[in-house]
Image (cartoon, rainbow, N blue to C red; front, top):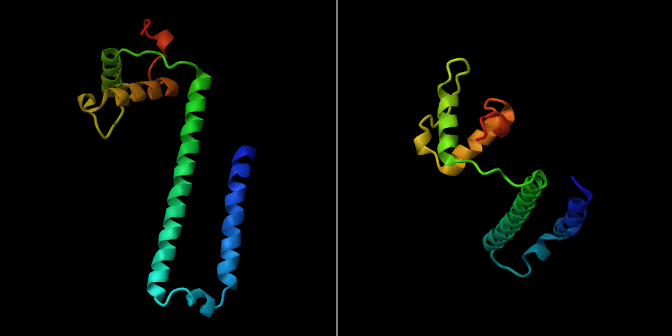
Length: 138
């Protein structure tokens, strides 16, 4: 975890610790003094915790997306890939006899263009398909 992320999460952790200490230190009478219905109080508290968890997860997702975007930007511009060529390469990779591959969706026509391009890029990174500069300029 980076120092920036630790610094960003520190106030939240302090708040959680303070709330937990406050709840654990409260007597039964204090827990029920504002509400005569303990089931409703428990439901309200669950709702608060669920909303806090959702906000935390959204924050983590946003941080992960930003990290991916930064990584992609540091690699440079994504090369333009001709979708027809990408589909041909994927089809060829799936039907190779010397290195058979399996996929849940073997019919590449059912895949979106983005999925096909992503698979071709992944296969290039894994060395299953030649990189752009090794594949006749495509």
